[in-house]
Image (tube, rainbow over all chains, first blue to last red; front, side, top):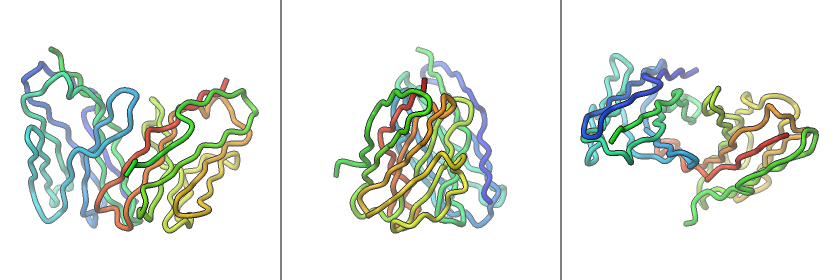
Length: 111
Length: 114
């Protein structure tokens, strides 16, 4: 089955700096890679996703890149703000029409 | 649409008691998922329904856990008897027939078993 590894598990950055979270997956047949943001005490919410027919997607300060050959994808947050502090989860579609989630990254943005 | 609706939001119960968690998926979504979240183990998939039929229940920890989906608009997760190690946040999520549109999570039920 699909296995998704996510790094780092915690990330602390200064406000205004960039943050990068990386994930690797094992199933070369996976075609869909969403990212979720979970604020403290709240539900995970989809913030951006990418499909295998593109290598990069951007939405304001966040962007995702995908390297299908290497089976890794990354989330990039630029000009970080305190409200970006949360746990971020990557995920990959698996053969069973489900998502396999990474272990999560706790991002702390220091003002 | 009100999104995925879970109840109760919080549940505190004594060890040995039966607990029932409820979920109403988004109308038109064919797939429903139950997850458990703890600090130690992260997000764990418990069970996945498609068109009301359980497809994958390999994540259900043991026989104390059971889940049903009697119709397209309602699902329950039951723990009987409950134990302190069941304390966690339980999320329900739904998605359209293909996962390529992501999941929508409910607000979760925070379960505490004392």
